[in-house]
Length: 194
Image 1 (tube, rainbow, N blue to C red):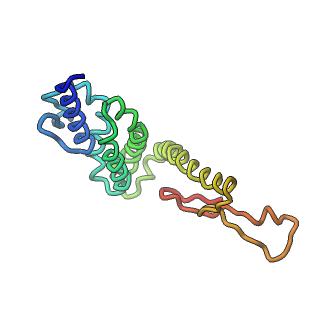
Image 2 (image 1 turned 90 degrees about the horizontal axis):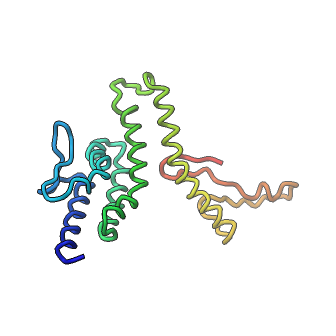
Image 3 (image 1 turned 180 degrees about the horizontal axis):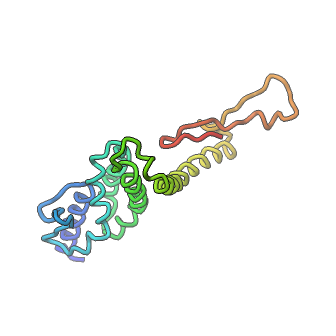
């Protein structure tokens, strides 16, 4: 790859990172009516795989309950900026965010766009479906965190924040069963209780 191609690729990646962060550049921007990506300097096909994230980040900036998710996405994106060198590599690196934003979009469409004061009343079935989808996404992350704590306890005898060691005053027949309990914890997004 010659110097000109490298500079073009670098400029493309720079503009793509700006779009994924929710900002327009002089050569790439979102056009209105209908919303679409407009591009003056590059082949539009480079941006199409990221179209969902580009649109949703701008929409979710305005949704207060999603602030934590948006901030962690932007943090990850800024970390990837110096690490990835191709659109393919960036696309693979952002797969978790694609899934997360799909889940957030379902929640937004079902719960937050509902004009009623009590959003569960009209869309009970949809909300149940959304809850199941979101639960599956977060459950895999929480399971990994819980398994990490349990493995550290088993392999290194490090109780971590998850395992509570209680030494009973008197000896009982179920001494070992009662000695170790998994604490009720809050893993940031959902509470989990043993």
